[in-house]
Length: 190
Length: 190
Image (cartoon, rainbow over all chains, first blue to last red; front, side, top):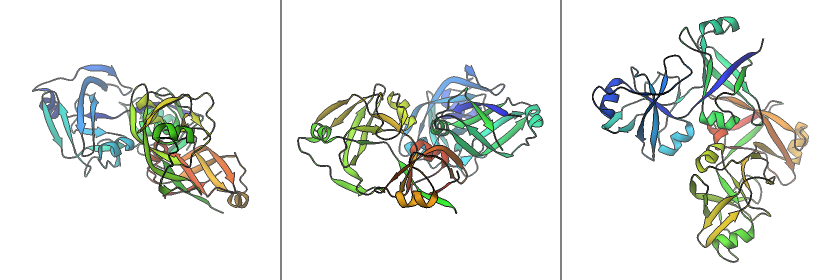
């Protein structure tokens, strides 16, 4: 049985707490939806912020909503060199000991003490997909992206939940190395 | 027998004809060596140029010497989006039908009519290495880069010559997707 998954390419983006949204956009500000994401309830917001590192900055970093319990900036390794922040590869939410960064919005600035990561490649599985394919939460998979720049990604983390929709998330470095784009398909080979 | 090769990461760079060096730096100008490269006789020059695409530019693009029969700009796919040039994946020297770009030096500008490529991943083999391992010129190989972001690159082109030293060349997207850097080692697995 071929285990085919859609590919979603994550450009740099940020998740913010409501406290940080307040500080950046004004007390009680609510993010507005630009477009829905593949995971139910998640959305790209119309709002963007600037992030400022020791060697450079990115002016329009998209906020993904809704607000989260901890703020987290996800960048590529290419980005990390550009702004001079040594972001480690981490699973979303596992930000202990990661570097911080300055975030600037229209109403103020916030100094994140931690939260800058390069997101570890992963696949979201609905519980039923995982059961069908015999895949367990946190299992490490090998996934093939075909084509001229074909490659096989190792250590792709399986994340299984009733609230997930099937989608593999890779960053722009991984996508560009493979010549892949959102909407392509990949195959779990192991 | 394990087939281990050193990894060389190629940042964006340009090769120029002597005619273009003359136009950019002044008649009869000779490139000066900043440091030797892994391939015998090749060097990174002290000189840099600006390259200007429709959506952006890079100000300090390293020239690799010596002068070549055709000018060629090698960028990553990430770079190609940044400057708005649709560079195809090509083997070095195969530039027919590729896009052009404006190049600017201290003494003038040159409009390249073609030559902007994303370099196809490849391994340089000395004839003796290739013979030892039973690898033929232009053979497509699978090569593994290990570690946290481990991956297997497909379609790695073997290039065999008496004038080559063993080295695998990948671009910054591929290196960053793998968390690899110059001096790492990779293994030919197929």
